[in-house]
Structure formats: structure tokens, C-alpha cells
Length: 320
Ligand code: FUB
Image (spheres, rainbow, N blue to C red):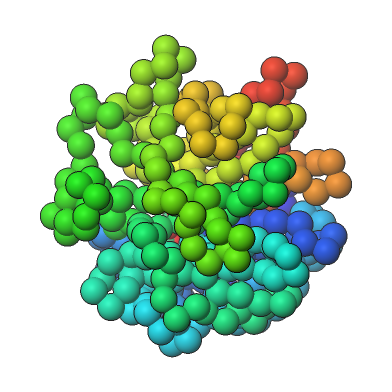
């Protein structure tokens, strides 16, 4: 089943991170601006300035807009581009993780907190020490530990960190070299820092070889999501310039992950970004496309579609 129409039509929304809190589905998306922009590979057209939170009684139910929950002007360290966020609940508090460029133009990841899943959220004064790049995904493991996955190339700057320090002129690896990888770090008990420096999330093929940079239909680009199903850990992500959502699996949250296949074929628009959530025993893919704006790649809209597992644990491929 799916909602054939965008879930939210009074504004442009993208990069939906969906979670079930207090029995409702909460959606934490980006808020695309409704104005004309010049497009480039640096992502300057994604000049978002705030976040709204939305919720539904179930994935096909009506959507409530809880209003603006955080604005760029209320994030002391950030200068521009509030990109794809995610959220978590731990010990009576809700945590909103979000990327933005700092005053030097370097993407970092910040945290904002609230007593309520719908916000409003109050930003910490500094980004998470040691954070970098974009697209945070926070994952609660069964043992009570939380992990933050993140990273995106091109405008997301992952290629600028290959030496361990930020180099604005960082290039993508040659096609025959291992691809850049998403990062993961375990979160501290207060959810505000990493307990150790971020490490690579290794993705290999069925022979155990790291995916190559030129393997654009399988290698990592941006938008990581982690979920667990029947004891298997699923790392799903966007292939960026191949415009698909794909996944890899492992028996633990740190990997290495073995590439498994495609979840979603390309949507209308350039970017594709998703989350996967269980609600009352059924699984759902939240994603975006640019149908509401007639294909303008930086005016996107959130959609939802039911997701099914095959008996062997593979995800049944979907068409938007
Ligand atoms: O929304 C801005 C960026 O576009 C996100 O961070 C990426 O994942 C892509 O969807």
C-alpha cells in the first residue's frame, strides 16, 4: 500500500526520518524553500533554514504539522543549510540531530533537545565534537546503545576528510579505488557526544571486496539509514548519481555490511533519501520525490510506501 500523493502539500519537505513515538508516527524532514535557486553539484540550491515536525496516527493516516521546531537563527554555531535531520528518544528526552555548515562553511552535526517528540527543540551551543559531513541517522540498538551514522559526498563534503583533517579541495577517489564510506560513532549516555572517534562503515560485495568508487549503482553516496529486522542489521543509503536506494546487511551495527540490492528505483528529481520504520507489525518506506513541484529537484515532497521482506530477509524491490 502507499500514499500515491505527497503526504504534505502546504510546504515542500524532504529527507523524511520516521519514528514511532508514543504510538504515533513522527516525521522529521528537511523543509525545502519555495523560491527559485541556481542548481550546482555543491548543493547550494538546498538552502534550508528551519525544521517542522509532522505526525500521523499511522502511515496512511492524516498528517499533523506541529509547526516550526527549530530555526537557523537559534543555532549559535551554524551559518546555513539545515539539511536532513533525524531524531531519537532516550531517558525522557527527545534529541534532534541535524547537519549545518558552521561559520567556516564546514558541515558539522548538531543536537537539539526537547521534552516532547513534536518539539520545539533547543540547540546545543556547539556541534558534536568530532562530527563532520551530513545526513545523521540515529539508531537505537536492542542492548540500549545508540549509534549515529552520517556522511555524504560532493556538497556533503565527505571527500574533504580523507586525511582526517578538512581539506576543501578534497577529491573523490579514482574509480578503481575503494569508495568513500559512511561513518558511525557510538553516542554517550547523554546523547550529546561521541564516546570514540567516528569510524568507517565498511560495505563489501558478496566476495568480501570493498565496493569501488566507480561502482556507482552500489557504492555509498549519502542518506544512511539503519534498522534491524529479525536480528539482521540493514544499512540502507542513496547511491546519489545513480539515483537509487540500496541496502547492505550485517550481523552487528558496525559492520562490515554485505551489499544486497536495490530498495527503490529512481524517483522524479535528483536526490533520493529515505527512512524505514515499523508500525504495528508492518514496515514502511518514507522517501521523497519532486512530483508536487513538477520535477524541481530542490522542491521535494515526502511520500510513504509499504515495504516487504522476502523469506530470506531480502527487501522486495520497490518502484516509487
Ligand atoms: O536535503 C539536502 C540534501 O539532499 C540531503 O542532506 C541529502 O541527503 C539530499 O537529500
